[in-house]
Length: 147
Image (cartoon, rainbow, N blue to C red):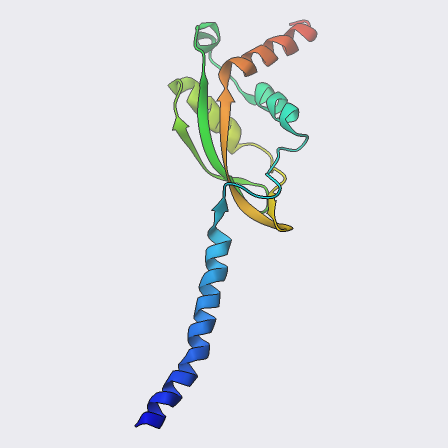
């Protein structure tokens, strides 16, 4: 009986180890880091990101003319392939502005993904959508183009 229990134990040990390794792999595939060696970046950097948002955000006249100040805080995950997922608003500013912010981010091109120890990883990113800043960029752009 003792030999049978030992045999069962030794035969099940590799299965338990394999199972634990598989869980570690699965867990690491779904982990979203907040701090990594190389943070994700929009193609061209932060200035390009501001320009992209200003050119793609369509705000209502009421929002533009309002005295509304502040920012919508958005959180998302930059996936290993650079696409954005799990886009949510964590602090609202105005329903119309928040809707524009979500729309712009959902249609954004892929970012350069984050890296940890030389490997591409999922990164949770918090982004301040600065409504007034994008209105100012739009205004400057329109003035340059003679609109």
